[in-house]
Image 1: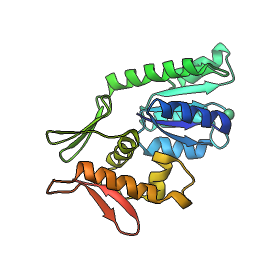
Image 2: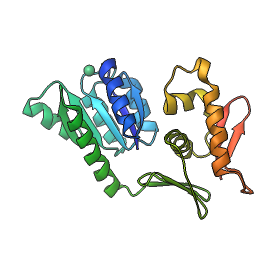
Image 3: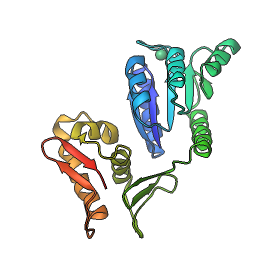
Length: 223
Ligand code: CA
């Protein structure tokens, strides 16, 4: 699943990102409300973890703005304020659940899992399709035509990212940010290497390759 964390406490954001990545989620982080809102409104996330006190746009505002623009992604709000009226205000602003800091990681994971389950029953998009290539996000399985394709965790994450943006050119650094999150400069050929692996599994032996190189820019997937 694709999760966005909007949290300005960098240490907490980093821990959350690591823990959720270990659960095989693809995790993006925004450290302020303005960037968070931009990302939340543009990319198709399955869940947003939203801190309340943020620089730029505050969590409550951000939540209202997303709901006003018809973004229905489940939102788990994090906050240091535990008073009943704060929780009620959060839920009224359109959050789906509420967690008071400090919290146990196990509780966060349980709530994330519950929200993702709930999201799935509302939104049936648990598979992404490009041409005859299908990615089953629940079963973590790729299939082209009748052929089931075994993918490693990174290959899956890379393919999921490409398939969530069909026809769109993604630069190496965008791919690095989303799939690897390293500081990009010196490792940029890791993207090329994994694209090569993916092509080998997805396109080899098929008349119409789906993964295209856009010279000097990056890659896109298109039927
Ligand atoms: Ca904060």
